[in-house]
Amino acid sequence: MANAKAWEILNAGGTALDAAEQGVMVTEADPEVHTVGIGSYPDRDGIVTLDACIMAPNGDCGSVAAVQDILHPVSVARMVMERTPHVMIVGQGAKNFALSQGMKETELLTDWGREQLAAWKTRNPDYRPKINVENHDTIGLLTLDKNGDLAGACTTSGASFKYHGRVGDSPLIGSGLYVDNEIGGATATGWGEAVIRACGCFLVVEFMRQGHSPTDACRLAVERVISKNPDWKDNQCGFIAMNRHRETG
Ligand code: ASP
Image 1 (cartoon, rainbow, N blue to C red):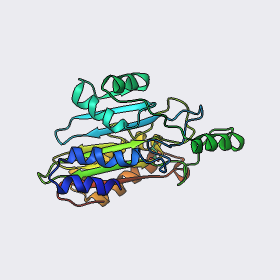
Image 2: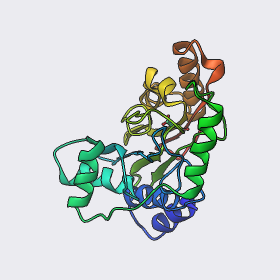
Image 3: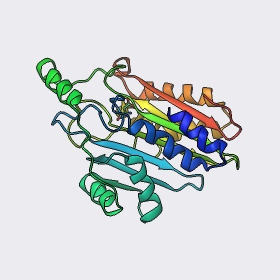
Image 4: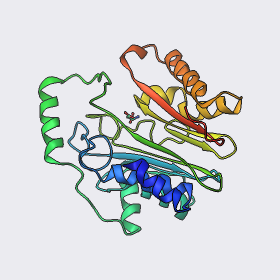
């Protein structure tokens, strides 16, 4: 669905930046996706907090983290990029900024999310999450437009039942997303703490800069994540990448 929206924009001659933002907005607005936007898993305090970032072909970037009650954190990230001198605004400040820009408050916690938290509390009083396919995910989208310009966006609710205020890799430029218009872009999913320790997406782009294919760059970055995380067997992470020649990995 996100890809379809992004293609619609690109095929109509739209920019990579618009395609990246509007593509992931589809997923943010889907209550059936429980790891991005509305309908996500809450944190351990029963609050849905969202992280997102966006990067433009000219190297500009914007980011929000731990933002509450806002349906489209990726759009707030874009507003941070385009309307403020900053790169990143977090927590209540991000929400206040979003409201000041005309966004409306939205209840992001659904009955499904409340039920998941209640069930988790009965089975997992010690918080040491084994990351697995059910309890986390992220959408990251890399786009290349007709002008040959690259952009990317990344948005998530992070790890389910995380500590309130926890921020993962996804809104961190260089960890969850990195785009260099001269080289290519990369975005990540998985256990954010592991990706942060390796500066994952910056690393993927740097490997491409050294001449590696997108696939090899992703593999080398995963190997770095493994080397920086002794508990790697308990973790999942993955990268996607695209270079400016349209090769993907
Ligand atoms: N990377 C996200 C985080 O740690 C979660 C995920 O992609 O699965 O917040």
